[in-house]
Length: 321
Image (tube, rainbow, N blue to C red; front, side, top):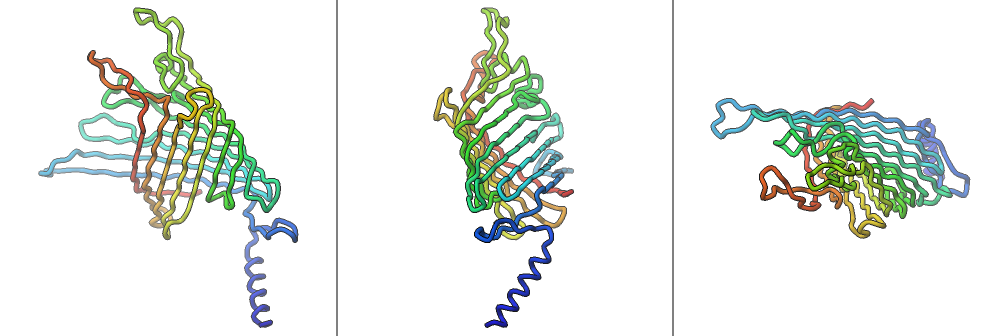
């Protein structure tokens, strides 16, 4: 028995001494905790491509090519009591089909910053403050109409900032966050869209002939409750699941009407460079109204808010640096 204990301690010592990038934190009364270096910086760029071509294909079909470029960067800090995560995500995709104009398939700029503090090394509860910003690069259209943009850079732009409590035994993989006070600011920095009252801002006041008397507002502010849940796990070897759910309701304007943002991604790793992604993104925002054709040709009536859903499958290569 003593021999077995001695051998076990020897291998434990070898394992510890072989991990120079990890440090022991805590005092003799605390659980020994292995932490990564204080700062972890990661950068990743990926390209997804797909192409279909037909020659004398009797079943019919349209030649097409699609491409998507994504860039992700993160800088994270962690010590015994503090956790600070920062990330930047940019994605842009286009599709070109025969006899049809170039169309946008993906457009995203997103910045996240989350700083958390826990009062003692044994607690899994953190006091947290979060910032999230989202917008897009280029004009969006209701295809095939490309004359009147329905969105632009910073129209809309969304900024969330708030503070609350976060639970995560392994906060890199599983997190529950509750903020009783979160400021949501919607930017519509385009005069035409602001005058229309797009994305929930106050529309322009018009006279009987349609002339603008008072311009539409460019900023809408809300204060409400934000709840988020994120989860990352390896489902099978080389298959990872990423899940993010965000729920928000405003205290003043229709309290209980919940904005939903729900993403599920499966990442399939073929080798060090080749990967595939299968994802689903569902959104509902009561301030984002849809339209339908009216009885008058060329005019549209408001059709209210609807559930938005996007599904995507991409195969390409990815480079970490």
